[in-house]
Amino acid sequence: MSLKYKVVEQELGMDLHSLIKFQLINYCFVNDRHLSPNQLKTLTYLAEWGDMNISDFCKEISDMEIYGSDQTVRNFILDCIKEGMVVRKGKGAKAKLIEITPEAELLCEGNIVIKMNVYTDGQTEKS
Image 1: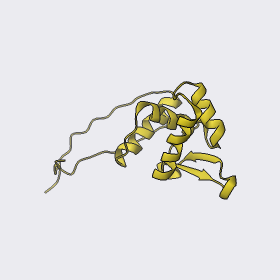
Image 2: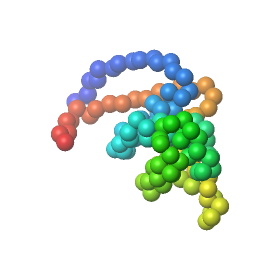
Image 3: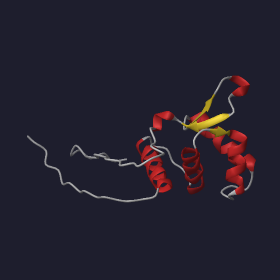
């Protein structure tokens, strides 16, 4: 028995920041991770800016008024490190650089085209 699929094709153009955010949303959806709008903004900027010193990153995000203080940003980032969404680069006390986990495979520079195939196998799952 062959499966028949309904196919929807869409083309979307978006700026780099929005495309990074789109990739993060998909990564979180597939991995059953839930983020608030502020958390999503924070991780989008981390992915866009690349690896950064944790103190500098927290200050930048706080200055943008996404969170009320550097410490609130740091607390969120430390939770992300525990959950594996963010990783530290370096060893021991020198591990002050942070980045989005490479597991997310985010494309964050240059001209980007993302092709996705999302399908159902015809079975339904109730949660």
